[in-house]
Image (cartoon, rainbow, N blue to C red; front, side, top):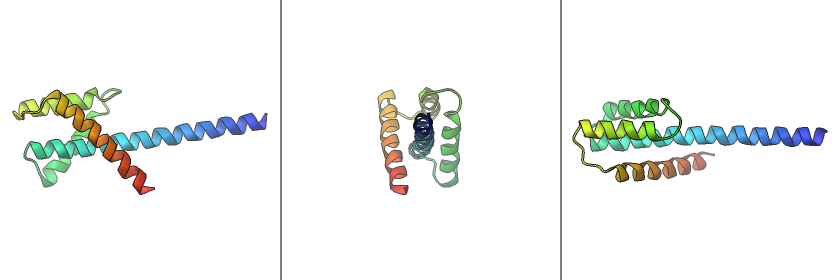
Length: 107
C-alpha cells in the first residue's frame, strides 16, 4: 500500500505545483495585458501600474478569462479606443505566452 500512497502523494504534489504555476502565469499575463492596455489608453508610470492592478483584480470576479476581457473591452469603449475583440483576445494570448516564458526563465 505504501507504493500506491507514495504515488498518490506524488501526483497530488505535481497537481498543486501545476496549479500554482498556472495561477502565477495568469496573474502575470493580466499584469502584462493591463500595462499594454494602459499604454494604448495613454497611461504611463503610476497610472499604468494602478490600471494593471485593476486588471489583475478583475480576473477574480469569475472563473475563466471573460471577466478580464470585459474589463479591457469596457475600458477601451469608455476611452474610445479602436481595438477589435479579436485584437484584445490575441493580445491576451500573446501576454500569456510571454508570462509563461518569464516564469520558466525565473526557475
